Length: 137
Image (cartoon, rainbow, N blue to C red; front, side):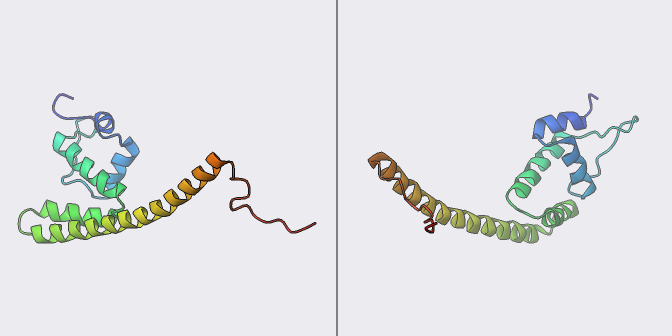
């Protein structure tokens, strides 16, 4: 398969399972229909691998498959809809920033508890820190 990459090679290159690659194809997330060899094997190009890397990051960052599909459809349509693509990406970026802010707030609370517990463990006063009280039997 000198003119392209097999699904196995794409799986290795992207870290995505063969099942995930087939799922992406079924969901219409590729920019083109993936051609097949005479034996029916999919033949990918490097541009497909690069696109998959982006789609995988979008998915891993919480973008719904339907939104990735919309983005792919816009890209497939070609020039003229860049403002729509930008709006989609900006909205996702805002969602990610909000999640990062929320996680940052969670991290602050957790870090405060870590600091309290570290101090109690170091000072030997950890016994009873937030221990549930037992009713007298």
